[in-house]
Length: 128
Image (tube, rainbow, N blue to C red; front, side, top):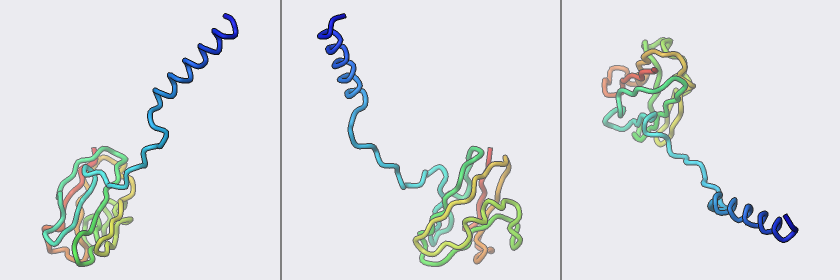
């Protein structure tokens, strides 16, 4: 191959790579929690009240209520069934927190420690 042919081949290769890469600006990561692993707390309670997730998932609790909530695993008041929930704890209005990675297949029941008798603030996470 002569020099002109070689340059043409390199130019075609570079042009093809530029087209394949698309935009020069990277897509920013999303800060929106995944709906499949999010529980929203409002004045009407926790929604959804039951989630099924794969092992290794983290659950995000979002407090959209006007009062403080403390989300923990059962049993009340020990909170020993799923210690991964301890990282959620107190949620001020407008705040959100995640559980640690849920790695053991089991069902984790949760409740609001401050409102234990409010059944709308109870639920379960099924870890597959």
